[in-house]
Length: 193
Image (tube, rainbow, N blue to C red; front, top):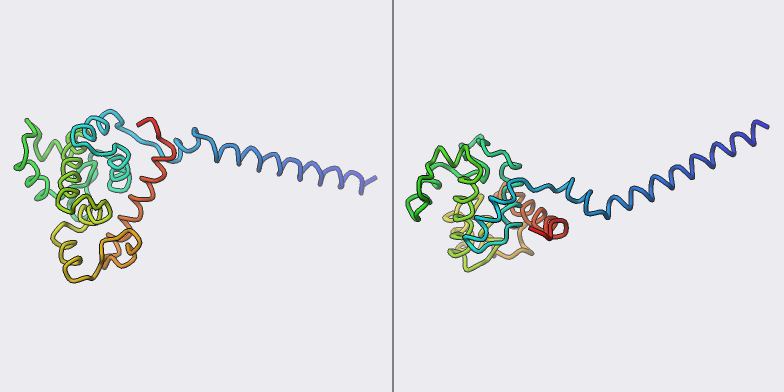
């Protein structure tokens, strides 16, 4: 009688485990779970700035995710500020190169819409500087355009996605890989942005 009871208990556990696996697989493929794992905040602000500067909003969302994880008042150990983590000198340079109305350096470090607009403008400018090469522009967003130009000139890195592992700065290498990872995931999950 005890063997029969143990066998039934074992079958129930196997059936329960299979049921959990099946339900888990359904959730993994679901849009809901994808949006839960890869959320996007400040969608309207991202859409507006991306439209203004003719960039993919999912690219901007990916940069934000890696830079600050959507924290508008983030400050890095190196002093980068705001939701898109711009160095104050870079932010001041950006503010002097276009008409951003009343946006100030303080706004960039506190207000998501200001930080998103300035960071999106900067990404557009980097893409212009580097002939539309997304991978090189992302590296420049992190390490600075001067440093990336030096890598390209010295042939330390060829600027191709296939050779991201050759980027000399580990932080920049990981940054580019993370942004590209989130960009690909966002394209799968957030087709409506």
